[in-house]
Length: 344
Image (tube, rainbow, N blue to C red):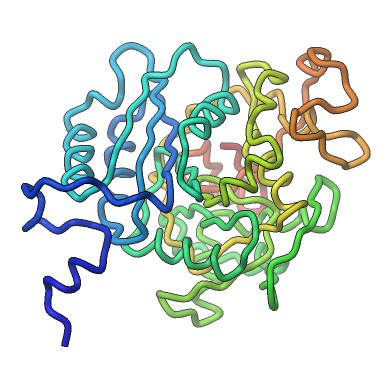
């Protein structure tokens, strides 16, 4: 029978009995990368979710683009940073201004990373205990480029939508590389991540809490774990300089480029909860996919330079990709929007 002391030694999270004992953080297997701007309350909840994770060893890197007082200066955020530090998690906070768009913000975070894997985690997502370990193990099992949890709105738990889950398809065997583009059959999987659809799908399948079922996705937003080398191999978010500061869908571009070379999957059950906060990205007229991916469906090279001349694509106005319908994202009344996309 294991003792509490033995259990504490096996996990990377230091318990309260050891908070005052000097010790260096263990080498991080995952760098958790969090872009934030003006969301101190949500960020504190996000960090609290990370503080509940036992393994693997991880480091947290925050890039704060708040106007005025940094959101990371809020007492609740500072308290959770101290908790993470006491638990043996290194935390870096960067004040990263001026704003040049989300793609540049993500590339800045990626540039700070050194762990073998990186988790891009939005600043309004709570993870249940054990979530990071299950995602980490799923990526090791699948040996692909990325895995992710679809963020879900728990205010939709009484809104079951089987018609939006018809495209669900689990990966049988290893996850394989595939190309996803608007207009392709794979693109039509996007409603799977509406509302609380992933919670309902997990219930229908009768999954256990510790299951790690890989399934086919169009893309996954808010909580995505990458093999860092795979993301770097496709250029990361270096394409940011080809986009105007106001854009959307940069995460989709990076994921599609990783998926078409290394494969990617969603993981059920999803342990990621959206906090119902309004979006901070309100201007979505420029869709990164339309700017960066060639009309024939191929992807530009790692440098981000495609067939279009640099700069000319900034003027393009594109139809935004649909975003999962989660609370706080301009939700339509149910009778108007049940089968329609809710723009985040």
